[in-house]
Image (cartoon, rainbow, N blue to C red):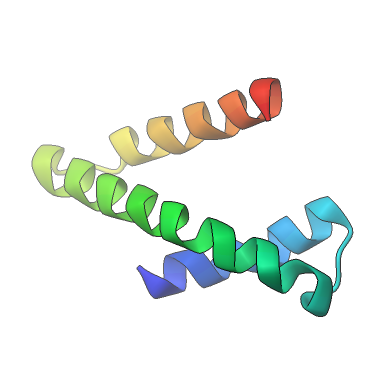
Length: 69
């Protein structure tokens, strides 16, 4: 879960045009929710035995963030 959260950090920094020092407070605020999404994706994968549900959820979350975020 921690690796899942950390691997999103460079993308989010680039998307916001921030350096590490600027992004750190945002990262601390967003990390718990990203960890929860990791748990949901893990549950979907274990429940259904394939990655399609995780990929679909990730795509829908990204789409909703693009529309509403």
